[in-house]
Image 1 (cartoon, rainbow, N blue to C red):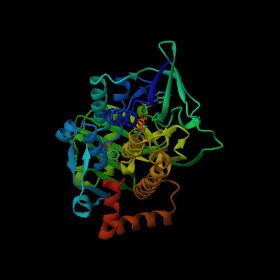
Image 2: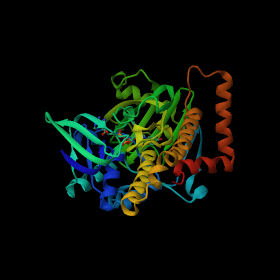
Image 3: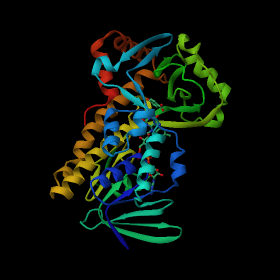
Image 4: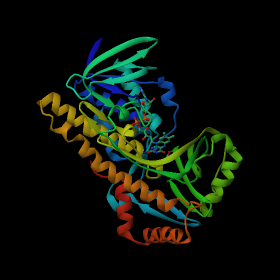
Length: 390
Ligand code: FAS
Ligand code: PHB
């Protein structure tokens, strides 16, 4: 049996960032990760970072590469068919976003934690949280066939949507809120130059497409597809032909295609579980909520949870105060629901669905027309996209 102050379940971005931020303040933690480091790093996910995430990476002392290699973007292009218009974040909010892949954020975190000899257990199995509703919680798990136990003060459930933490909270305590969208995103990574120097979100009569990137030589491209589609249903040729059709013509003509080096389908859902705390168990990130990737909010909202929890744990250990922990769920959910709203709204105006009535389609196009021509509407969109305050 061993002991730590905080057991963190999940070695994705939220678990790793929490571990690093706590270590900077001398607070012990152990990270339990189900997969290997390489497996976690092989998952291609988010690409756009809010300033709050960048500031926390700086606070964690690991922002150097992100500042060196990240691309600062001052705006995005939205398109309805061939009619494209730009939302200028910098002019509207004074802020930009940073394009730097989640994979690289996670790599920077793993490198820093492993260089510091931080206790991370990989390939753990059968993780179970015990007595979370008492002052003496503990976690059991198996690794390499050996059963282990860690006694702790707190458990951070950073184990994503399919982890064990959320379901540790009794159904009598927990309330889930969900919307499942009738479509998914097929994403490919390709060693080709991005079609434009900023992101393009396209609402075409054939469906949604997003032209994103990781760097000037690595493009991340998405098309809306039926949620039942699998990556093997889409050859590279089929993807590029559809992607080109959905982009505004002026940009489609500039498209450089190439072989995919990664291809995946992400189902889209909006999901929140309340509360995000039960006794000494605190849920962070995808363990507590999911957003459709349209607003580039999944990773960023996981990180805002981490900030609230980190501040609460520091007040507890440094000042003996539990106020930050006691208000964690309320504080985190207040921001989560505003992000859920934005991600749902942006998904609604950018995706075409078969069950959309002619009226719905007209309303959607009117939303885009209003956004195109109204500075206040653009300012509201920009404020959400660059990141709401913590
Ligand atoms: P993660 O899911 O990243 O990490 C949880 C970790 O816990 C994983 O490493 C998992 O192996 C581990 N784990 C699970 N169960 C465990 C157990 N029982 N014991 C130990 N460890 C366990 N967001 C965007 O902003 N833009 C995007 O384009 C985007 N695309 C996405 C595509 C897909 C397919 C998915 C699933 C998500 C996408 N997201 C996107 C959202 C994504 O970036 C998440 O918000 C982000 O990974 C959240 O980080 P974590 O909360 O750390 O959860
Ligand atoms: C990405 O680059 O993967 C990305 C960017 C913006 C989004 C979603 C995904 O809204």
